[in-house]
Image 1 (cartoon, helix red, strand yellow):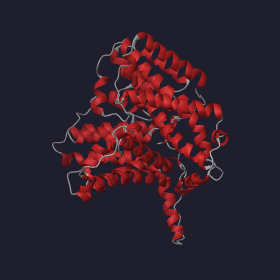
Image 2 (cartoon, helix red, strand yellow):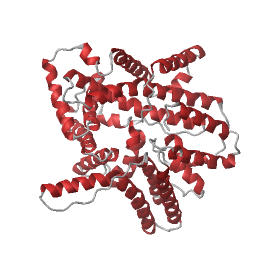
Image 3 (tube, rainbow, N blue to C red):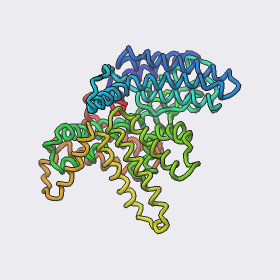
Image 4 (cartoon, rainbow, N blue to C red):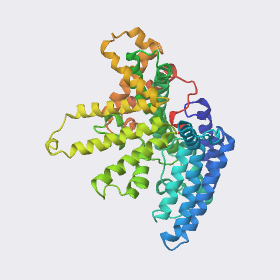
Length: 475
């Protein structure tokens, strides 16, 4: 069930109406049932994986609480790690490793082949396994008291607004909210609807429109013209941002209407003036997860210079692999890790310490570094990514042809996309890192309603509604 459909609008409306009628003590059960139903609309069989992950981590955390020290807790932490990462490996990475091992055997002319399993990737598995893993690790580290209520813990794992694509919530934030009594609140309703509207604008007006252009160019690289490649590179940067942040906005807005506060997942990342700052603004719930549960355990920056840089690179490499079982994602993570290491080393050169570039220039340099890295993220293979980048060099001898430039989706959709991206960037520039929904809520009544009607009218008349899945559902 997609957020950008009438089906979800009806489902969510019924959930909200019933939720505020049901007595507080039964709301957790109602939301849990709604969350399981929401997930099973994709594939009912895979609800078993969520139940398994929930059961293992509930038992493991309860057992850890009974142990006097960390040494005796470790077997239960290991149980959680093996169960969750085992599920993730089996369904997401097993085919990747099998194909690469078989390729290695073939290259070495060894007559051996590992049988390949074809498993459908369960939607959202990377998100809910990381969310529940953070809980058991926090219990192990005494940062979280085990949740005694199995049903509310199950709801924490499967809460439908953020189940399939985040934000990856922490138990210290979300679990206590399931215990508090929530009353219907007009201000929360209005703020949540504004957040949903903003997310829907980004998804329906920008992301799904430019996706058609991007898919056309990447699907036919041999015939794509260099200027089309340039546009596709920029368009994908905005496609993935508007698609993913649009989902996060709608998830946060939906949760807010139900009385729950999810963490902000994006803070105008394309206005970052360095790669490090970019990762402080992009997919914040994942970047902070890797910071707390991988980077710091590796030693963080409390070690030698060489080890610190290696820790950073490892984190980005793993982050890339988290996104998908393909060498392109590993390359994408390595590029970002390399850029981080490079900027740190450059910043330590004495002659350059006092040298600063204008902020606008650093923003543009950061943005274009990210855009070029996205080529590896989007390409079907490393070879396609390299072909894409090499063909960009031909732009020096090509004459711009507007008809050819707009041909993948037509002139009307092309310019609608350009205008919408411009409006969004202007809006986000003046907002800074402030939440758009909160900003709109502070405006005078006449201006707020002008924005509402303008956004709704634009979405109704110019939105693309082809039940296009959100990009991060595949991760």
